[in-house]
Amino acid sequence: MGPSDDVLTSIEICAGAGGQAIGLHGAGFKHLALVEIDPHASETLRGNIKSLKEWSWEREYCDVISGDVKDFSPIPPDGHRESDVKKAQKFLGKPLARGDLSLLAGGVPCPPFSHAGKQLGKDDERDLFPRIIELTEELLPKAVMIENVRGIKDAKFEEYRTYIVARLQGGWAKHPVTGIAEDFEGLGYEVCEWEVLEASDFGVPQLRPRAVLVAIRKDVLGNLKFVWPTATGSPKSVFAALDESMSARYAPYLEMGGDVAGLAQKCLNRWKGEAQKAENRKDFGIAPTLVGGSKKHGGADLGPSRAKAAWALLGVSGVGVANSHYESVKKKSQDRDLFREAGPMLTVEQAAIIQGFPANWKFSGGKTAQYRQVGNAFPPPVAAAVGKAIADVLRAARERDRRKPVPTDVLPGQVVSARTDSVDDRESAGV
Image (cartoon, rainbow, N blue to C red; front, side):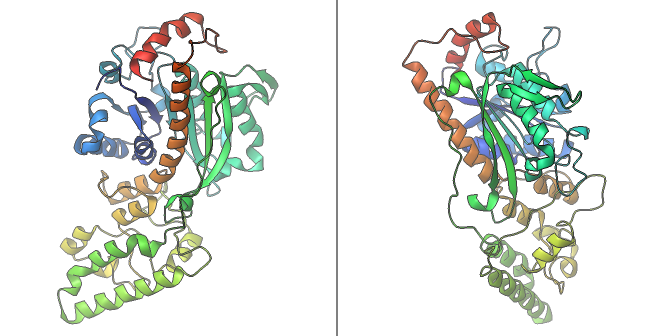
């Protein structure tokens, strides 16, 4: 692998346990850096990149950066500090430069806009939209992808959405701090709307609407059009998703014989009956949105009362998270994990199935830390669908531009030297 290869590169902030990274990886992007503040999630990223064969490129060229994204410096402005994107220099043959990157992505924290929170928006200290705009200006990637909860599309955040769009593509908007309307020059991007995608439309057995913003640099987009992905097929039910793993969890007790086996069979049959019956409902028996929760609150469960009631209709107890299949046998916690009258609790592994993670993706930390990583993730199949749509445009633009001379015009906010000096570098890097 070298810089002459046809590679689409990406940097992701607020990477969590890798939901978006997995999806973008599946869409053909190669990660140069994954930035995540939670130490357990960072270790999850490192562990999987280290152990999984399909992540060998990232093992060689990707930095997993455990720290605050506000301190992340991919291209230090003063030259006195080394770039945080170090390993990629072996691939690029030089430090990362403005315009080199194919995609900047991020699932910025959702609490500022979540219906489950106070919806403080721009006034919430966890709002990282300003930071991803800063990084966009610094990196000038070909495309930007930002994911958040559906709540950001609420009417109360219209002014803030308008401001974010204006910062990217230009136009009038009220500054969120001063409240004064300004005509922003923009950064040279075309915002391809702010679409709400439903996870269940992409094979994820869960109701999980997510708002996704995609912006593509105007010189890249040109005469091309970004097309949002469409549903991949019929919704997948919780029964179809968990049947095999649920049977495997009860299997050790069925093999014991006697009263334990009888109880296990009764509980398994009851779960199967409820989950299969749910397939005939209007929602096709898919799960409610998994809730990762906050470190400020107690142990993990499957969400507020309404979510727990929805899980009950699927034959699952939502009051907590079960020990793993092997830990349950070892600790003899079957009465808590599997034999409840209200139904079995989900394991972290089963929650990951509901979220759309691949079976070989392992999570670091204790049970609660692992569940929170899963519950807060962007479903990989949805990220893959959006990533493929972006990749299609970038590849088409590359083929178009290879057939014509490189334009000499300068984007807003871009100095001539940065533009002209980086053209040959980007072509040689294949980005």
